[in-house]
Length: 359
Image 1: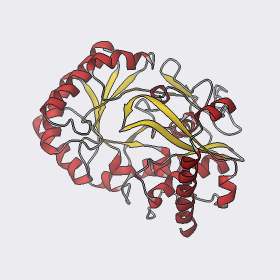
Image 2 (image 1 turned 90 degrees about the horizontal axis):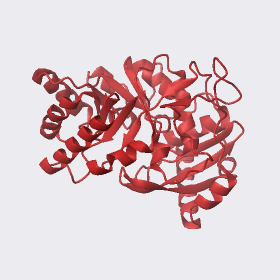
Image 3 (image 1 turned 45 degrees about the vertical axis):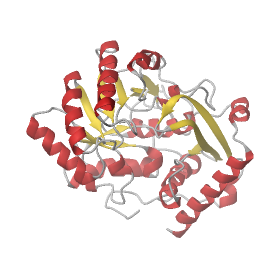
């Protein structure tokens, strides 16, 4: 988690709360999903309650203490410091279509309502050969048929190798892609693919996600000329202020997306999107629609393809901002994970806290 010019350190000037303070009132929830997404059918998250409001700590299960510490720093910012004042009252939001059969695309899209853009998951694990690419093409074609006016982007989560990505993107480009998110792994892989696409005359922008949020140097992708834009997520980058610094330092346009957050975590993503100086792309912050239930009632879903900004103790420029999401007590009780999972998450938080204490 090295320091870089223009990027605030983890926690910035925020006080690191004692471990007991973080754990007081903390609760782990397990939210079922309509469809498997990123290999997950039930999304677990630890919710914390600080003086500035509710916060979320939900690093994916495979992340170790060092990486999870960034997610905890974001939760501390949300719950103990609050977010910067927004510069816009609303942020546009895209729909997200998991790697479902083409026949199920309409059902998924209907859960989001009208949106300005749609992100389609491709290159599902174990389905990256010719048959898998054919399924991806069919899924994207069905989205284009059902939402002909929407901007269309795809997300491969590093699932393809170079040859597969080049071949797949040449086919998918026929449907008018806004961009392709992390089609291959690594900064060198992205740079090589981007150069090959340009040489082939394939008009697809490259967006970097994992190559920003999971790198020790989040600016390396921009220096290498490996991407046209960056995808930023508040929790993995260590908070709203740190994400703002990273975007500014890259000099690239940004898309704000979620890390499969509850409505509590989505609010942090909206706070980032509402503060960015420019927001040329719809945000991937409508993912609460992928859950069958949520800790906030009503769930924080887009209205007309957008979400209202919110910030602790403040409103937007025209007073249109909404209050920060607050978990519903009945929903917390209904979605509360069993005691074994509560203990497992308490231990994870303690390990991440230890990393922050040592920085």
